Image (spheres, helix red, strand yellow):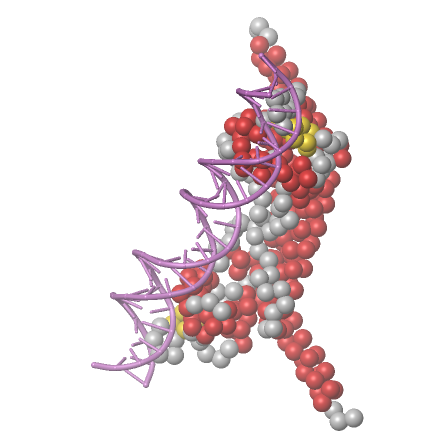
Length: 144
Length: 144
DNA sequence: GATTCACGATACTTATGATGTTACATGATT
DNA sequence: AATCATGTAACATCATAAGTATCGTGAATC
């Protein structure tokens, strides 16, 4: 989805679900399902009818990777976690506490990291890379 | 499984898959499947026949939560990750790099944390808690 | 204003993986 | 020999995600 958002930011005019689906090698309905979260969060807008489709609706500077992750409906970050949050077994409680502590710490770090990089930042990195690539291409093309 | 290992450490003699299954509210075959990883890693041993079952086969001090996690076959820690590791799309590559960087950092932290606490440490915490609990119980029982 | 286009939403199907189940073989103890 | 317990394979079930089909609604075009 991040992929899509950045493309949309560069795209002139709306992108249809079908275009996006082709891009992601999936189908339009799945795209709409996933984008619904972004729409509800106000990050994109969708227009019906001729010339309709999806457009960015927020300042790229203000939207972070964390925001996108949450909007897209992925509150869960880890594959492991307490299966029995308040177990009756004292042994299990000790285990749970140990795991929780480690997981919480890692989660906090990850959230901090994701919350620190905005879509605008990614777009900037992309531009930077492109300019470098094209400069290298120019050098390579230069007759020697 | 951590749960099981700690119980085993306290248990006198082998525990059968059936006992363990009851404990985890599952069935014996699933237990054997999962324990197989721990057996291959040398953390537990299994004996057949009468009086057989599972016993701890390693120094609790030497086995960490990370070891257990790996032995049990869970190399994957995060729910998110690069679906297209080397994408042809430059936009996607930028996105992937940003995510990878954040994920790697969080993973390193989590691994470090899990690798730092041994089963012996958990057992110690459990004992500590028990002694506190029983002391409180004794206080509560005291005739006033 | 009829047609076409695009999303919105629902229901249904398919695919995948984890888990549960059955069955049988093997080795160890009694 | 009988019993107990694991090892393994094959199969069934369940849950979730992904894909599909269909219809409704609003917007632009002719």
